[in-house]
Image (cartoon, rainbow, N blue to C red; front, side, top):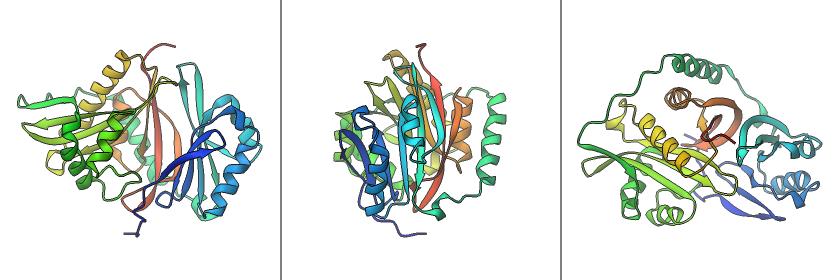
Length: 286
């Protein structure tokens, strides 16, 4: 397995826009664009990434600002309709500084995507949870068990999700966690990373204990998060799922999500860069 730096990504400002970057993903991620930084920001991101030796820039921007990035040779890899308050689409753009990172074999990713679409046509309800099992939102006092489950499932991660203090801090900010307990034992976990200004939410960080796999626990978690976040008024849900994970792609396809594109060589997971599929779903009418 490739050695990966254990230093977590940094979130900071470039101009008035918010970016995330670090050595694990070897990329700059434009998380929130401030329109006042245009038209110069696309080139500033390239210069920023080049000085740090990063191989990719990944940007999530309102679709109407894409031409400013296209002028600097950014490519659209995916889209999320209704990302901004259910009305304006987000384009997910890429700029590759490393020609090797831009190369890819799409065969396996396409095969899994085709499988997920086929499985979505025959989507029986998941089996009910055993009576002794409980699905509920996680609380701050659950953080040690959550960190331990993430430690078991994710050998490396660009944020310190193995740290209970970090998980508690994110609960106070913008992330909702959901878990499934078998009695007192946490067996599955997921998170909803909310963006209240945009009224969009990322369904992410699904983790199931090895002994509990095969029970469709991710589908139970996703259905509950969809229901709760729709009730809270969020318009659009999406995920960025490992293209190599048949289970997670099937989970979202069966959950009524639509494929929005593939981000190539985008995210470091368990020691290597992986392709990621974007799936999206309207939770409330715009």
